[in-house]
Image 1 (spheres, one colour):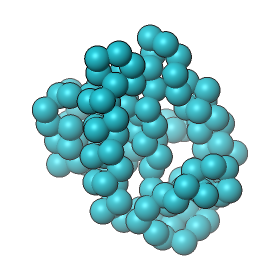
Image 2 (cartoon, rainbow, N blue to C red; image 1 turned 180 degrees about the vertical axis):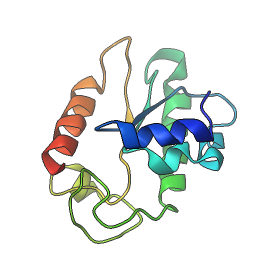
Image 3 (cartoon, rainbow, N blue to C red; image 1 turned 90 degrees about the vertical axis):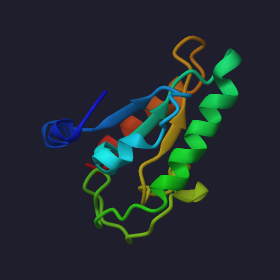
Image 4 (cartoon, helix red, strand yellow; image 1 turned 135 degrees about the horizontal axis):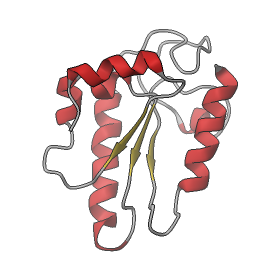
Length: 128
């Protein structure tokens, strides 16, 4: 698990990607510790098989929680933007930087979502 000390790592990396496992029972506990607030991208793994429904529910919970966060102007990759609480579909489809951390679903087992994750990382770097 991660705690408040790991939040300091956000200052030491180019992109802070938070990898989340579904169905831990305390999906939003990380927000209490500050780790979600500093993440640039949230990724929920195991979007496959028996855990697919749980993974999608977990991603939905994080998207809702992130909608409550206030990010400073220009936080994503250093780009300047309006300070809005939610990432619209338009923004998540390469029409500008998101105003909240993207929450992506992937499956390391099947490869689902990996190309989209890579595109998000590359897009983040283009705004840096």
